[in-house]
Length: 111
Image: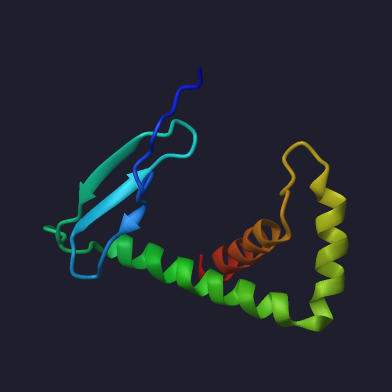
């Protein structure tokens, strides 16, 4: 005789239920662990190192977006990407490769 097992209508929730709620529901894909988390406002002020890191990240992101749209450099970037892709420490995605190139350019110009 068969065994019937009933499930709840909802298996799991991932993320916030509403914008007003501080409770966040999480689920890890690899281990299938489910837990909740409550985000609180930051208690410390932002340091100058954090401001500099945020500025660097934003500027590199803008440079990557501009470089991906620049048709004059895309062909050269693709050939350079394909040449390094299969090496031991090569970047496997074009986006990561461009991020690396733009980060090096940013670090050289901004010391």
